Image 1: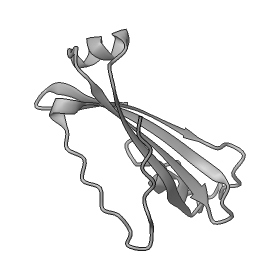
Image 2: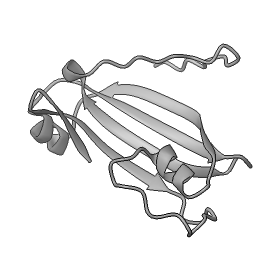
Image 3: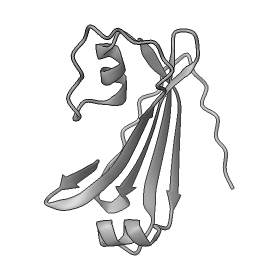
Length: 117
């Protein structure tokens, strides 16, 4: 999926759900525009975000062409788990760094881990 800002590409994303997760088939399929956790909830799967990784890196050739940028992009990867702790959704988004702003609100009960190079 690609999102635009001011008519220019701002995000490329992919969402991969665990097909082994039992779901309620009584629900109608969610629209393609809903988030991964909302889609899972529509099938009766309660999930929570377990991990978010934010990185900056140079774009590969395809990303540079889509964004029209030769400078670093932001990559955000998210993992969701069900109530038993099993992974049910993985999402990866790549952002044109000059066209987005990330606002991250932390849970006061969580201690973030910072890994740097």
